[in-house]
Length: 363
Image 1 (spheres, one colour):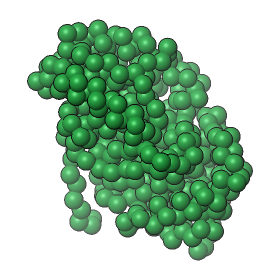
Image 2 (cartoon, one colour; image 1 turned 45 degrees about the vertical axis):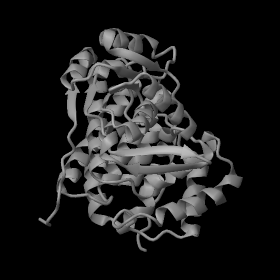
Image 3 (tube, one colour; image 1 turned 90 degrees about the vertical axis):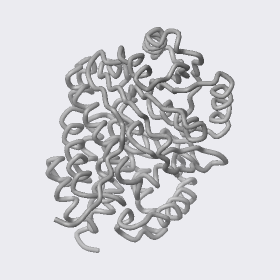
């Protein structure tokens, strides 16, 4: 076995149906008394947010309900102003990656602990990665200050997620595990977690899409997303994620939807350069990875074309140019195959048209 270094991130995980009731106990365990609750404020989430607010009781001093994907810099600044004004000492977030992302933007400058209660499969609650968008560019970085101290996984909170959110969100998690197989920082431990995450998501997603109220299947899917988030948190965003960040930050495409469209095509492109990793992934997916990911996307009825997400054919050139520039910044081994502008255009055109990806047999 090759030498490696593995730094375990210090996050406490509370997992199980009904565990959202533990949030006040976890606030007390951190020694905190003045909580800012961040949620979406949407009608679908209102009851769950109200329940968490009620559980927090006197500890709740601010409730923020304006959440936007990709965390616009202007929004982050306004949320920070409220956090300073109310003198918070803890942030509790309930929702998807956008809610967690806003909490991270506050913690980045105020250094307040985060307790995350995910309601989707984004996985960002397990990473030190943050992202803030301004002037059509999503700036990402890493800081230990944004890593949640506690994550409460309650599969009951995911039952109400509509199918159009569930499927792409699961693909977001899949992308974390798939990329962790080759991203900078990968090692035998992250690989083991990533492959288990892939197996859990692959085996449960179809059941969840067919029977949304199946809490056991939801639990398996959430478990896979948790492992995927840990795998990403221990490694780094690489080739696939950089493309999705461009599509989201520049063209405002929904982050999870971009993952379900791009992932099969990115893996098809990288496969010739990653024979060992693709063999492991094939074992977890039960077939050639790029095709298996595509088939799962189709079976799960998630987006498979960039055109369906609102990108236009005229956007492809700029998207390719920006993606190539971002990919070029990745440290080895996160970009295992050189990608020219023509290569990226071909990848994005295939994703735009929605064709089933094929893998080159030789380079």
